[in-house]
Image (cartoon, rainbow, N blue to C red):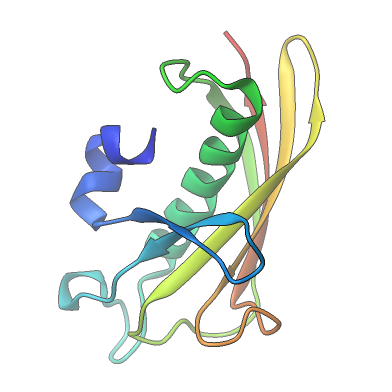
Length: 125
């Protein structure tokens, strides 16, 4: 699903397999993504978290064509994101008939030291 969204393609986001045997999204560092000097723009980090939640829901539903709508997004920026490759992974917390809840983490060099986390509520069509 991520590589079929124009924004995901523009950012260069791709799916990877992690050392833990799960799948995550990887955002390659690029000068166009810089906010303050030497750091990723916060909106790009937020987008990566949201797209990770959408990818997790797509995996859970087994339907890559379905396009749920984000109802709300709550983010915690824990530290500045440096201009290096950045990763995000999400999991579905609750899957109802009309709404799904997901949470995600975003990290760079060390998965145990996230740079951001988030929760997304998604409206299912």
